[in-house]
Amino acid sequence: MFSLSTRFVQRRLRVETAMKKLWTKASVLGSMSVAFGSMLWYQKKAESDQLVCSHTSADTNPPSPYELKLVQVLFRHGARTPLKSIPGVMEVQWVPTLLEPPAHTQINYKVTDLHGGPRPPAPVEESYRKNVLNGGTFPGQLTAVGMQQLYELGKRLRRTYVEETHFLSSTFSPAEVYVRSTNILRTIESARCLVAGLFLQKQTETVPIFTTDAGSEILYPNYHGCQLLKILASPRWAEASTLPDIAADLQSVHSALGIAPRLPVDFILIRDDMVARETHGLPCPSALGTWKSKVEQRAVDMMCHVYEHNGSMENLQLCVGPLLHSLLTNIEGKLEGTSSEADRKLFLYSAHDTTLIPCLMALGIFDMKWPPFAADITVELHQHRQTNKPFVKVSYVGQDQLLPGCSGVYCPLEQFKQVLSAYSLSSEVHRSRCNSTKGAAES
Image (cartoon, rainbow, N blue to C red; front, side, top):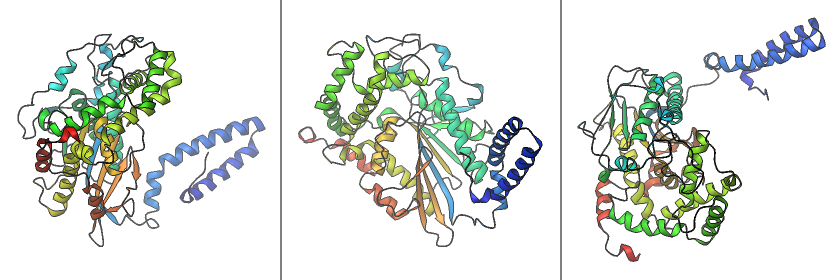
């Protein structure tokens, strides 16, 4: 439980010596208490001294051969109210007090279009306002729990890029940091909370959060803006719940929950409601307990069926091709010095689970688990200090990933581009493909 790395050996010996002295001066019972207290003290002391140790061991631990040049973070919004309640199943109260923002997540920000103009219309958000959940809130709204989740993600990024590497300034700068969100309130507010945690609310300028109209959005699979994707995906969505294994399990879950026959309630809807309740400490139907893992599995199976079409890459290309192309463009612009913002160091993209899943699939690292609230894919650009060759490192929820097709966690840029080459699409090519619908319905 208290295993130590070699760099802490000397400190451990000093603590053990002190503990031996305590053993000789105290009774057996008192000694046990002191020893236990000393071990707890040492554990906390070791944790607090890590930074000091990193400085004292600088001679034995040479600096990384890689120099960080650019960071891009694609993240899911935080916890929210469900998109729909399961009809006929025990409902809970989604009251407005659940949405009250913690004071430390507040910053001065402004939502604009991609050119700094007025915020575009938000038809998706408007669609949520047509329904009211039991308790008085709208579906899909970021809660205080979700706001705190994104604040914590911001603090994690701060530890890495402000406190440890000093890569970013400690105060928000729009020249350094670009923030983009889908034009939906929960992702906009999630971006706000992440920035608040990343810079601890320190800002000298208003934070611009850029977004775009629904027709040209690339931060989620755009079924409305891409006619071909709609044609390809619609039947996949329709048949996902009718696949034999999924259909059999769904019928069992419907029976256990008392859902009326033929109601359009699939595993994704059930999972959404279930996870929203659990995250906020609200009760779930007791019958759902034994089906929890199956609901998770089948919801993922449905998503895979939609995105993977008989081994064809076309669905994934149309879902996330322009987004992946943007990530590559940002990398190349940094290396070539052609970026319009030479001081730009961080791109933040506030998006959805339906963004992360196809991105993880395209990268070859999807673990067949639904991305949790506030999950992030972080793409770092590094340059080797001696050879100047570029490398890319990808992490998911804070864990470094070895991408298939890469020779190491630090993936040579050419290998990384090859990984994405099957799915990355420029906006021009994507637009052309989306409009090429002839024969698509028969494919």
